[in-house]
Length: 157
Image 1 (cartoon, rainbow, N blue to C red):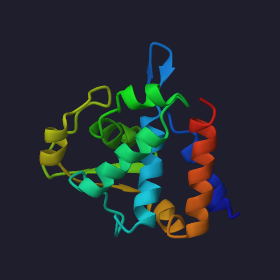
Image 2 (image 1 turned 120 degrees about the vertical axis):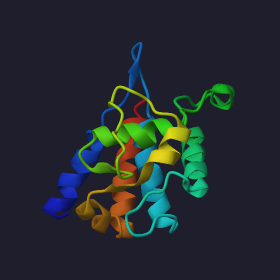
Image 3 (image 1 turned 90 degrees about the vertical axis):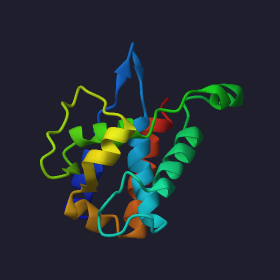
Image 4 (image 1 turned 90 degrees about the horizontal axis):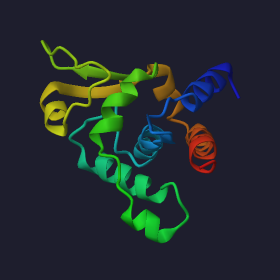
């Protein structure tokens, strides 16, 4: 593994999760897994993640349901999925994920949670570090990073 791979693997595994009353949310790690899957499936081209891309949004919801907190099928069927706009926006608190706002837009504070409508109207696209993007073009690296995220955030729940 190259030093770049090790660095980005470590950075991804340090993704901060939301915490509400002692319960951690896996929405951001699941969204990162979704980005990796979307690259694999050819849904993201040129390092531009479009909020309006319904295929990516659907993939996020599929992944969220797949990686719910419990093995209990009844719990998973009835658990509330974190809305797509939340990890899409809040992942920008991480050093590797960036939002390209439309010209003249003053971005909301990180503590705020803008609506889907606001994001559709005010974001051009989001993107990840170019070096991370290049790494994720490799199927082997995607597999490694994806599995590391699942081991760290999903299987430990």
